[in-house]
View 1 (cartoon, rainbow, N blue to C red):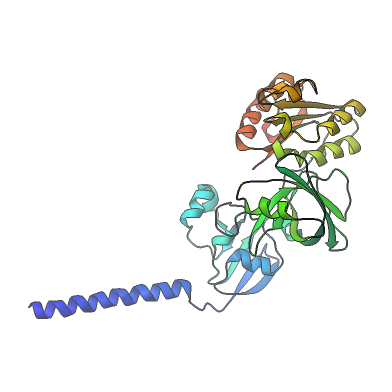
View 2 (view 1 turned 90 degrees about the vertical axis):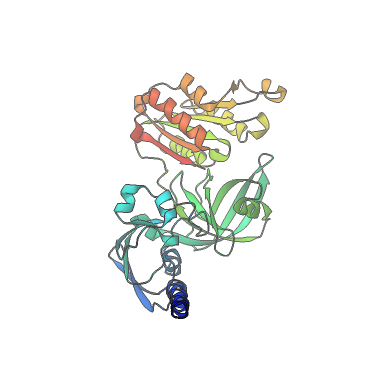
Length: 361
């Protein structure tokens, strides 16, 4: 009896191993042939099966935002799959809410094309372009923030953007990182960004290493965080390098909407972390409708005689000074904790939630 059972067990074991190998081969090295990719029902592409969706889109000049190099950690490349949707992966269940999962939303960087697929993406992403530029200037504005000026060489018509939007910079073979446009002057052939150096940060280390004449590639412009065409008072709340997108918003408001009030609440840790301070003092002197509220967590001797700073956190300064909240709209950019506390201060001052826009980093 034993002589009969042992070979049977061995044969079953071999069968299990062979089945497992087949499944692995099917998953990782199967030849899927060509697949059709339909975008927004109007664009159809033939792509190689086995390709990840984000790469297939990139190869066809559709540039989705991404900040993780396709590792599935940022969630920026979310699309809605209307035909050919697959079961969600664990990482997608973490980054995409349950309602969106049920509606077919998936991460394009985690979606491998095995058959025909139809997707929907925001229409504005179809107009995102690739740009080639050269570093024109690179200067430290604080101990860890650089202002980088870029001359745009391609395309020749240059860049058009909305105040508050951001660009995605290529920082490796397959990596991109997002940085807000910080330009205060509108020139199609030039753009400025401001980059805080993060220890071991791939994007910031790369951009801080660039010098005048170095070439770089970027995509954009991206984002729904931009100045709205209304008559409301503009409230800008920034922490650290979150000041970058506020400058285009402030300058456009002052130049284009002379009857709109603008208030800037800017928070940093120390006086040494503050930048463009003199610029905003001059703006306040020359524009009666602009008001500047700098806040320092720590006020040392260097700050004490320079300006009447508020000590503490920017949300406290906001709560103490903001009026006419019901006639205001707010733009916030900075660390999540600052954003969350400032939103609560704005709501307490009757700023409608629908008129609070923010960009966390």
